[in-house]
Amino acid sequence: MNALNIVKIGGNIIDNPEALSGFIKDFAEMDGYKILVHGGGKEASRLTKDMGLIPQMIDGRRVTDESTIKIVTMVYAGLINKRIISGLQAAGCNSIGLTGADGNSIVASKRSPIPVDYGLVGDINPDNINQDFIKALLRQGITPVFCAIMHDAKGSLLNCNADSVASAIACAMSRMYDKTVLTYCFEQPGVMRDINNADSVIPHINESDFKNLREQGIINHGMIPKIENALNAVNSGKVSKVIIKHAKDLLNNIGTVISQ
Amino acid sequence: MNALNIVKIGGNIIDNPEALSGFIKDFAEMDGYKILVHGGGKEASRLTKDMGLIPQMIDGRRVTDESTIKIVTMVYAGLINKRIISGLQAAGCNSIGLTGADGNSIVASKRSPIPVDYGLVGDINPDNINQDFIKALLRQGITPVFCAIMHDAKGSLLNCNADSVASAIACAMSRMYDKTVLTYCFEQPGVMRDINNADSVIPHINESDFKNLREQGIINHGMIPKIENALNAVNSGKVSKVIIKHAKDLLNNIGTVISQ
Image (cartoon, rainbow over all chains, first blue to last red; front, side, top):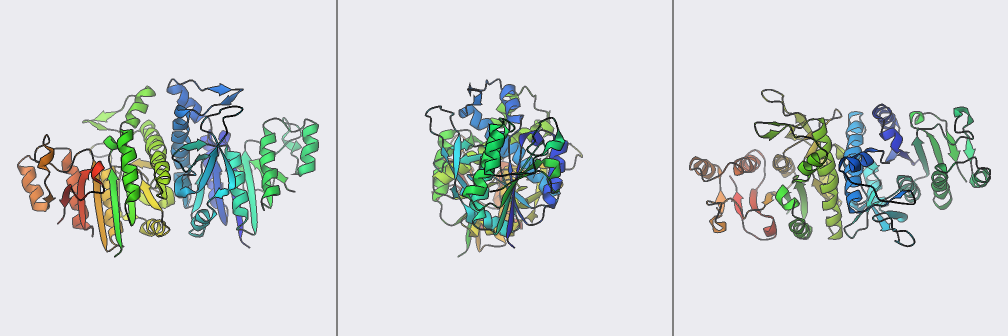
């Protein structure tokens, strides 16, 4: 069977060299076709501070101005992406680091400045993902590794949300594979009923479970967009299932499974 | 005929947004198979300074320590490379940004720490260039754009000289094409007899001319390694000729031609 794994690795793992190194080894060992999407971590904020710049925020959310897009392009597309690629190569996984501009692989749309202008921030429609290019890499035995910097095809780079990038890639690529699994790896063992109890992982969530858990206040603020992205992938795309798990469990069959 | 153009663009052009934008448009217009190699420019030094770091120098040459490789990876592989790629995409040239780690395209050897330890600096043997991968991109209509960050295939990134990278790529790829031309673009109209007279461009230089011009002191310090790289490409590889010219003349048939 023609199967594809898309794995998203979050910022907290990227900030921890030991955790990242363990994750890279595990990801290199995964069999079959696979794609990695990585988040940013704290390095961009550190660099902003080192450079004496003050992040612009609106309602607690960062505005991506010209200085910020420079910094995130340096950190995400340069430092973090190439650190992961050189690590994967050393672990025997032939991989290639990509922004959406590379190979014109993903075109994003700049988010409307109304009602809030977040600057150079983009959103992705799965129809604007160059599936043929990505599939050609996979067939050559090369694993694509995406950061969340995309382009508008008019010369501007745009900062995107890495969870949404992973979900959009999974939706688009699922049209070409019999089975597509999207895995969100982060620093918790899954979606938990009680954030302080690692044994409270909810093994399975579907659309109506999500509605209930949200109404009961069991699913917390940060987890909501992640599960929305996951449900979006299984509903609007042909993605078989989405798994939310701890990065150290990449190769283990545990975590929270989200399906229709 | 199966022809390939390899173009190297230097740091002074990269530092000038107007010159870079003009160059990107011209490069996008070049017909046939082509590869771009870019240098670094002053952005890395500015960032080093902004971050309050002091560049380590030995005999006037920069030492690439851990902080420096981080900075050059951010600036060369991130900022500059992706700026060029998004510009090329906007100009209709499908391109992909690469370090040597991406697609395991180029493996460099860390330079010996004896007699001088320059740190994480690498040299490239044309035999360690993944010609098949590069050729597969070209055949898909994708133009590779290399920065001079390579890897050692053991997990370390290495800073290399962009002129040497261009020469090594030209040597390696020339084995697969009937005609390979390497063009070094910079901020002067070619190799000049008199650095202050733009009309003094030497139209043609071969190995014995170089020897004479060097003995006469006509070729200055900075130009010597560039011509050595050029002669290396036409002598040890199957590279047809090397052209040294102003970046604004990319599409014009002028400059200095170096051949056997």
